[in-house]
Structure formats: C-alpha cells, structure tokens
Amino acid sequence: MLKQLGELASKALDELNKVSGLKEIRTWQTRYLGKKSSLTQILRSLATLPAEERREIGARANEIKATFEIELARKKKTLEKAKIATLVKQEALDITLPGYSISPGRLHPTTQTVREICSVFGNMGFQVVEGPDVEWDYYNFEALNIPKSHPARDMFATLWVDFETENGDKPMLLRTHTSPAQIRVMERTPPPIRAVIPGRVYRYEATDATHEWMLYQIEGLAVDKHITMADLKGTLFEFTRRLFGDKRKVRFRCDYFPFVEPGVELAIDCTACDGAGCRLCGNTGWLEILGAGMVHPGVLRRVNIDPKTYTGFAFGMGVERISMLRYGIDDIRLFYSNDLRFLKQF
Ligand code: PHE
Image 1 (cartoon, rainbow, N blue to C red):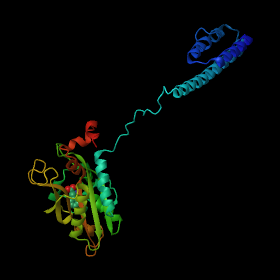
Image 2 (cartoon, protein in one colour; image 1 turned 90 degrees about the horizontal axis):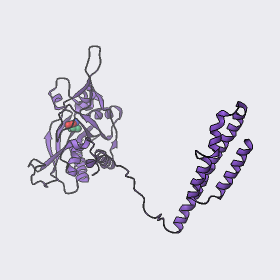
Image 3 (cartoon, rainbow, N blue to C red; image 1 turned 60 degrees about the horizontal axis):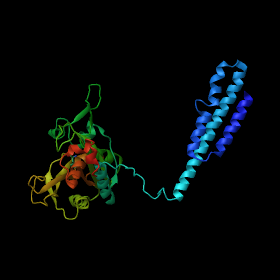
Image 4 (cartoon, rainbow, N blue to C red; image 1 turned 135 degrees about the vertical axis):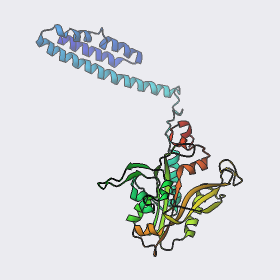
C-alpha cells in the first residue's frame, strides 16, 4: 500500500503541474482530495488495518494530503495572478478606477472648538494646561472666595461626590466650573502666568435646549506685574475677533463673580441679526459669551502671590455656547446625544 501511495502522489503532483486553468484545478481537487478520491478512501480505511501498518500508512497518507493542499494553494495563487495579468494586459480590468473610499471619521464639534479657541490663545502666548474633573471643595469654592454658607454657592448647582465627615474626610465634588484650575496653576507656578484650561464641568441641572448637566469650559488666567483691566479687555477683544470675525462689536458690562474684582461679562453683537434684535439674542442685539475679571487679591494671597506686586485677570467661557453661536445650533442637547446626522455636519 505504501508503494501505491507513492505512485499516487507522484501522479497527482505531475498532473497538478500541467494544470493551466482555474476550472481544471477544481477537477484536480475533486479527483485527488475529494470525498471519493483514493487518498480519502485510504485515510478512511486506516481503522481496519493492523496497528503496525496503520501507523506507517497513516503517517504517509497524511503527509501526502498536506503536500497536496500546499501545492494546490500555491498553484491557485499562480493561476490567479496570471489571470489578473492577462486581464490588465487586455485592459479588461481598469486598475485606474478609484476604489471605495473609507470614511475616516472626524473630531467632535466640541473638540474642534476647544482646539480652535486654545490655538487662538496659544498664539497670544498662553499655554494649555488641565485640571481634574473631580475636585475638592477647597479648590472649587473655598479658595475662590466662596466659603461654606456663602450665598454664591447657589450660583452653582453642585454634584457632590463626598460630604465632609466627622472623621475628617474632605468634601469632594464634580467641578462646577474650570476656575478651580486657576488655583492649581497658581499654586505650582510662580508668575508670570499665561494659561488656558479647557475641560468638562458638571452641574446638577435639569436639561433643556440651553442647559446640560455636563459641558465644557475654557478658563483663562494671566498673572504678572502691571497687568490691568486694559490687558483683559485687549486680550478678549482680540480673541472674539479672531474667533467670530473682524466685524463683531464687543461689550463689557459689570458682573459679579466672587473670585474677581471687578468682574465683567463680555457680549458680542448678535451673530444672527448683527445687533438689530432677534430671537437668538432675545431682542437685545447682544450675546453674552463669557465671564471675566481681575483676579481677587484674596485669591492671590491664598496661593502666596503678593497682590501688591502682582495682578492678574481671569476669564471663563462655555464651549458649547460658543459653538452654538458660531454654527447656529439651537439645542445644546444635540452635542452629546450622539446622533450622526448632527455630528457629521462638522
Ligand atoms: N467660573 C465662572 C462661571 O463658571 C466664569 C468665570 C471665570 C468668571 C473666570 C470670571 C472669571 O460662571
């Protein structure tokens, strides 16, 4: 039987060598590897052979089967290559036809706006830093002149993570604004400081077209000798122009934030009606885009910066609001509801 196997192998491989078409190759495959092929028959009948013979013949038959399979695959590849080559030669196969393009995805509109804003400030000499999303009460409130039971705490509907306990655990929360990062930057960096801090903030809030419980802010901080309100105005004026275009008018008005003095609110003339008054601006002609002010001396003192030598300004803006104004988006919930019909537009 061994001899028979040997002959079978050389005959089959010989024939395979002569095969010149893909159809023929299938015939060969059925003949030598198919269910009715002698090789399969031999492999099937192994069980009926005496143990000694079974081992020898089984090994040889399996070896031949493996060789057949390898040679068959090799032959197929060669024939396919040859076929493509002929098709190309006959120009029946147009290899210049563009393939299906792969859709590469894109950055989320918020990420795009964050990057754009950071790059505007980056070009003005600000460096981008980050702070933690989960904060101590101290950074989010205390250090920013908002002690416990101060009414200004009501400005921020807070998501608490941990309350103060008798055994000394400190209260912890999801930061309600990026301002705590001001403190962290000042604690570890001596002036001069120029920093922008993008990140998520969280509020205990019912969602509607203008409120989300999670949103992005970008904080700005500059601390140095001789920084004045004029620097604040100049910087933010330049920022709004770079982001919203040369035509925009800018308005500063007094506002209150416990950690700045004086505090201001910045508005631009409405992007939809150019200041005439419309639904977007509530008929006022103005859109508020950020809060800002001169860093409060008490805040500076707390981080060991002498307010007699140094002054600074800070600002904070909501990223989604800015995207909404720039692109005419009328519902903040669209940003994080993951609807591709919305996201694909950016
Ligand atoms: N943190 C303030 C807010 O979330 C914004 C702000 C930042 C105001 C810095 C003044 C200075 O409303």
